Amino acid sequence: MDELVATMTGFARTLRAAGVGADHERTQNLLKALDHLDVTDREEVYWAGRLTLCATPADLPRYDRCFAAYFGGMKARQVRTATTSVTRHLAAREGAGEPGGDDGTAAPATASSVEVLRHRDVARMTDAERDEVHRMLAMLRGGRPLRRSRRFESAHRGVLDRRRTIREALRKGDVARLRRRRHTTRPRGVVLFVDISGSMAPYAETLLRFAHALVRSEPRTTRVFSVGTRLTPVTAELRHRDPGTALNEVSKAVPDWSGGTRLGEELREFLTRHHARGSIVVIASDGWERGDPELLGTQMARLSRQAYRVIWVNPHKGYADYQPLTGGMRAALPYVDDLVAGHSLAAYEELSERLAHA
Image 1: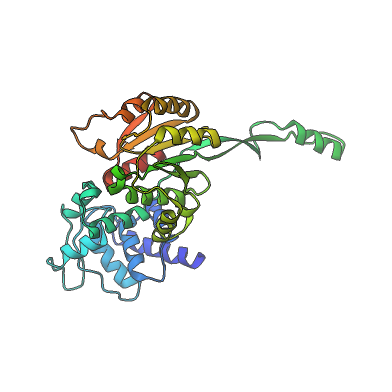
Image 2: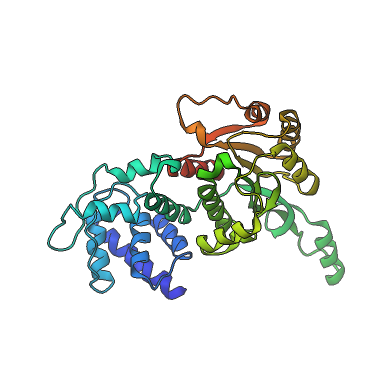
């Protein structure tokens, strides 16, 4: 691991010398991404670096030249790309008709269909486009706001630690030093409910891929449940490193794919058996409630009293003419802090940012 860090920080210094904006924060993002990739695969390392270290389109040809020189003459792909959200398949497809220079550098980036892909509804994508979005979601790493824990740790400044001070005084025979302590901090928890009913079928897999990225980022403070006709915890299945394996395990664990939605009953079950105290609750659903909307409203009121914040993710919110008219949405809306879109890669990136700064 130390050798990998030394190699990649050296590569980042090479890029900075060439004028690429590979600063410390971008280098740390690269190292975090490589934790989830095969570092022996040069193509994966190439794309991880390209997505994290390049700050502007002008950085791309410099990055390709430096990568080829630093990693032993590997010829850079002739691709055309627009943003840090580039996807491998589309970039390669566009680049097939856009020759680069003789030295193997990439053609200058312009606005392209790759950027369009970020904002396209995943329900309207081809299988290849959806695969690229899923690959990008696997690399999504969002931070979490910190909350004060009940636990304490020793500190030079803080409240007086009476017990420790007295114990030390009894052991030594006098009070040589006043011991102090302070509360520890930990990332704020997230509880994510993913609607897998029939009406959410076009979005369910992508939402679970997003859930996998959250679990991989903060495995100790993220809980994920599927909701349909029953409540199913799937956090353990999503802890698998490989997204495909994780989704296969989820498919085995969930018995109610593409059925109806009884969210009110499932939230009641959750609040009876679990809790959301101090957590950010994310409900990903279109609000088509087959159960009693009044029950859903009652359980949402209970949930909102426990949670730090409630965010409802509705795929249809991404359209300008959307109005929350379904019975489930109308019952839940008074207890929702944020109603956000959930139909595209850009929407999931925005949701990740929202969770990081909640």
